[in-house]
Length: 115
Length: 217
Image (cartoon, rainbow over all chains, first blue to last red; front, side):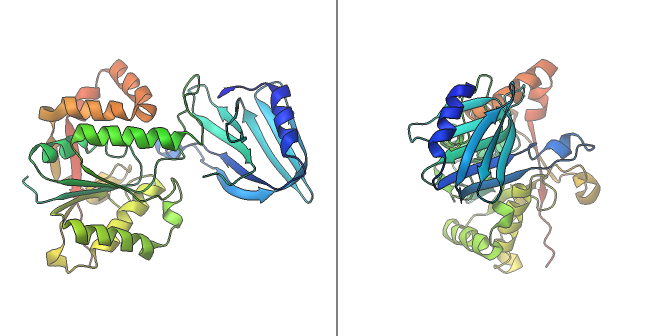
């Protein structure tokens, strides 16, 4: 993955607008966060291969970046995004990595279900 | 120590590396067949590197290759990938999981099974994996069940389970063990660097500790 180029990501988001697409969205502190630090409140969420349709997708922020997708009846949102990749399969992968290179958030879009 | 067949069941490709790979290498070097059932490909691993060497979609492919390399190093010739997904094991149908594990137990007829101690293994996949193995084994009469050696590392495991009753010095295969750990590079490189700075890695890795599972039925 490469550090996010906001203009290129915006162009990629536009390609997925107004049609059915599959989404992967996750946030995570890691399964051991509360084991290593008992005071740490670990929380996260994960959705894979939900099918959505958004009318507008937008990347904002100075970096780390935020992405919001406006659905007909709601929203998808992720913050802390640092890296992106456009795959050979035409998927948009966005991820937020912490200073140790550990993934903290991911937002991915694809025309076909993720394997 | 001479077993007929050793069956190892863990949910993630590197779960065997730090705590069990010396034991596995010893069994394999004794000529004991070892079957390793790995439930997932560790798809949800967080370590992507600086700069990133992997992404959410390529990580499972990398980890599968690392697992195959580690198995070759340890002398595991029978690797079974069950195709569950990382961090979802506890939400699977428990009977269905036990069915699949019981079929492998029936086929391989192990004298020793190694897995996680259910309830004492921190990661929900670890606990669910250990519970599925125990559920599968309970389908056999108690006297016909193989010995089960469990890995546990929850903060309360010694308080509840006592000291581990199997403590194995694996110094004689430490080079093989270190090579297997290094094979899981995407997961272990950072840990090994941190450990070598502390200088206590080798002493820790030379000992492997297990709790023999105590049947409650």
